[in-house]
Length: 163
Image (cartoon, rainbow, N blue to C red; front, side, top):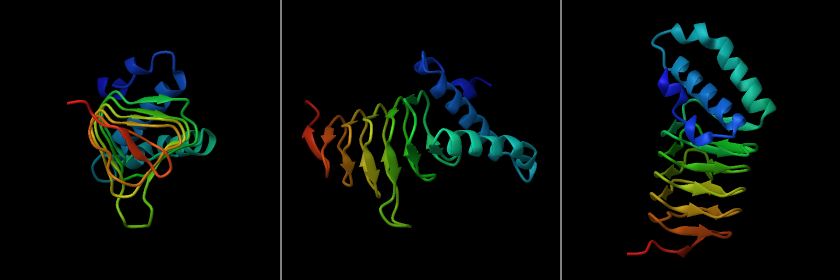
């Protein structure tokens, strides 16, 4: 049960973020049930699609791999590809898109402790290193090294990690 609430403490004062993430983790657990047992939870899966995806505008599929303690700030207009990987202790803000440029091309893998600013777009088979920061409105189509700050369209590293 604790695993359902692993994002709870980092989303203090953010009831929407808390609700979305608990619901997402519950649906992910239901979908992972063996055989056809997941069908017993299909009403909740449908409620997730209608409530979170259609009404709230948050596309966060339950096959997406997300680490612990994800923070969602103002989570609307959020689109995350089902095959994307998001590490531990990351922050996503409103309007973030994480996906592919062309079908079958591959999707971003985001490390731990990564902060992604509002309206940022991360596309293609890229790696975002641990501790990186992606600026608001950035369009990231190339790897971002650990600890770097990337901003702009197309995104460029504007500050590298200090040695």
